[in-house]
Image (cartoon, rainbow, N blue to C red; front, side, top):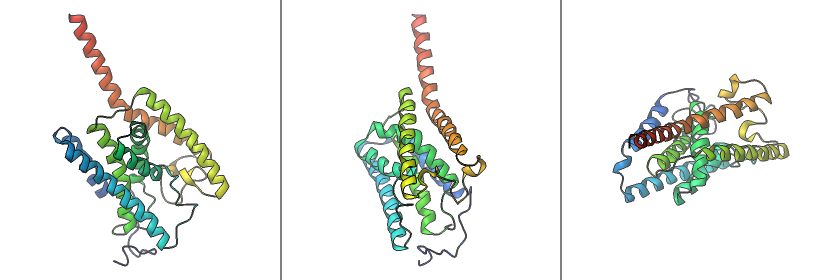
Length: 246
């Protein structure tokens, strides 16, 4: 148990691109999608609160662990990273069914959390350390929260959602850049690349990789919006065909 919470973990480091945690998260979300039409109001509420509980516990415990082990600093632990911010926003979204937050949770949260699941900032903390489970559960629950709101509650992004999310997220990045300059932090990893392995390693050096992040972010948002665009096109095509046959 001592090694489970140890600052200096003696076990194996996190295995990049491991599959076990990804398979589990995929199965959980597939279960929600497959059972979405069978969920009553009580079950829906319990599921929403369950996801809220997971997000709240893993994020709070992450701050407590860093504080107890002497690692909590304003340069690293403020909720300014994309996924950290989206955890608290997703909690609010699930509690009050907020559509404005859903736009960001779906278009940004899924993209950011997926990248974090593929290349977590877990460093030396592999299975079975607390940090391993915290990273997997927090980012996995972020994906599940957005998917739940889409497939169970019926929320969906609109074309204007893409514009709104892009503009506001860029304004947010500028604000975080100012914070980084003032306190010497690296939130959003826009001051420098992270020390642990990540997808940013294959991109050009600072500051050029930020432009690539912008482009990749837009591509991810378009891919996430694509299923809804295709559905809209099919609905419009079917309506046009029906009207022409009348």
